[in-house]
Amino acid sequence: MKFSCIFVGTLLMTPERRRAIWAIYVWCRRTNELVDGPNASRITPTALDRWESRLEDVLAGCPYDMLDAALSGTVSEYPIKLQPLRDMIEGMRMDLKKPRYQNFDELYLYCYYVAGIVGLMSVPVMGIAPESQATVETVYRAALALGIANQLTSILGDVGEERGRIYLPQNELARFGLSDDDIFDGKVTDKWRSFMKNQIKRARMFFRAAEDGVSELNQASRWPIWASMLLHQQILDEIEANDYNNFTKRASASKANKLMALPVAFGRSLVTQSSRRQSSSAKTR
Image 1 (cartoon, helix red, strand yellow):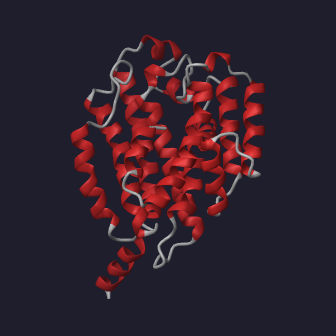
Image 2: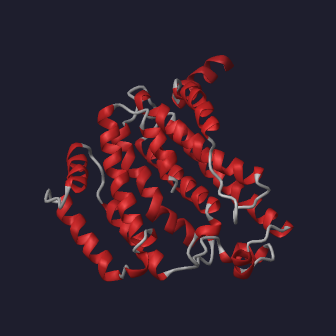
């Protein structure tokens, strides 16, 4: 997941929510760094078992350091479900033992473990708008979709930097006449462009599924989440602008585009999806 895009969004939050979200994201980042950081080559399943044992101590109110203490305080203050935290460690186990994903179902499960759970844990901190008419399940489903969309975008933006892993569905690569060798060769061909168009279309579908849920959040939370979501989508735009060369060109939102996204995000944050439905219903009467 592009933590830089998330970081920009958190700067727009209230101080209380910002501290809580940072506590969650910092723990997620530390967990991710176990298999993607500078010491990743020395990480073993036993090390992840120790990290999970440490998590249980943190959740029991026995933190090891100040960062652990921040997470411990957040889960005690907000009604955050704890299983997603454990699930993320399971996602790291997948990274150690599973360098390929045969189909999108397998990839979706991985995306849930490493990013979807971030969306699920964030909802209690963000809060749901008092005027919202959506069910809680609808909002959580949208939050999960946003986490999946963010992770798919991260995967597409970092194809050339995956340490020998390939997070693209093998059966879909084959359908477009591509193989692992094509990925490692890093050549942009018509087959690759067609494949990437299909992958970007899917990521945008998940972003659209997330939009209604974002619009149901507490008003103080909608602007930062809209901002983060728009910044992630700019990465997809940049891949297209680079002629689908995500092998040697790193796709990222420019500073100018980040700044331009903020007022757009603010405008979208002013209205809940429920309000839109009421307005639409009134116009048809």
